[in-house]
Amino acid sequence: MDNGQEILLFSGNANLELSQRIADYLGRPLGKMMCERFSDGEVRVQVLESARGMDVFVVQPTCAPVNDNLMELLVMLDAFRRASARRITAVIPYYGYARQDKKIKPREPITARLVADLITEAGATRVIAVDLHAEQIQGFFDIPVDHLYAGPIIAEYLIQEGFSGREVVVVSPDVAGVPRARSLAEAIEALSIAIIAKRRPEPNKVEVMEVIGDVEGRTCVMIDDMIDTAGSVVHGAEELIRRGAKRVIAACTHPVFSGSAVQRLMDSPIERVICADTIPVPPHKQFAKLTRLSVAPLLGEAILRIHHDESVSELFQSYR
Image (cartoon, rainbow, N blue to C red; front, side, top):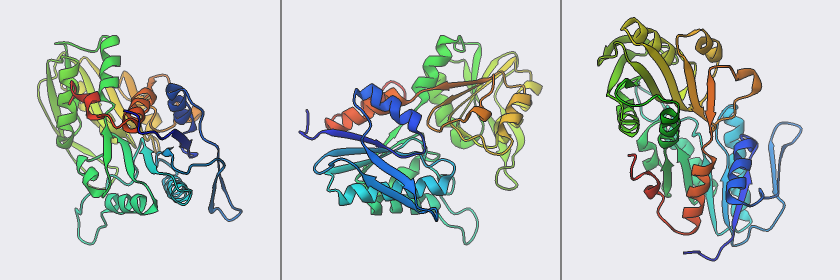
């Protein structure tokens, strides 16, 4: 059922390539908007077409540089609120600051909640996100959140490439990722799942303690929501090989690739790295092992369903 409003799709500067792919899927051009910087670095935004009464979707992952892209998103949302858009949906393929979703040590912030409050206060009336670092972040918002999963896209690629069936074990790099690994294992009809038990002595550092599950002689597919410094996935792959794994494939939704991640991945026993295009990967971070899959059709379909007041969860009925 059409709600009588027109879709307007706008993009910030964080991932213009993905925004254009979404626009191509929807069969409409990106909206006209100026988004640049004043001489002192402040964000300057002006919407260059009428948004009054429209159903506006703003695409902006809050990836690196995280603070710049987050501030740009907030300013854009405020611009559309003041332009009298009827509904403003923030399409955030990658949600930054998601790793601080709870207090672990005394006097720590819960930054994932702070960012949710900022986005809501800036003017968003709905949020679309892909593979949040923690499911509970949906509850940090006081507005509807449509949480999408890239798992079916990754599963389809794995099946096409022959990484499926009884010879495959899906590996979660930590206990928290077990539901994600289980869903992927069911989708590709893998033999079983395995879990890497690890500890983090400090942020971005990891120590593998144990591998729970039989991986000997199997192709292992490690699945996570993101690869940041690549420490977890590389150490995990090395341990899997030591345990007798035949091959190791790494898959994630968000290719953060910070620090020396790319070099670590290239030097690792990982045969192939599969990721989505939620975050742009600049040319100097692209390497021979890397395969990128687009979430544009998924986001485009979600946008259409939201616009027509149809179910978004139906997209994942056979997966989750």
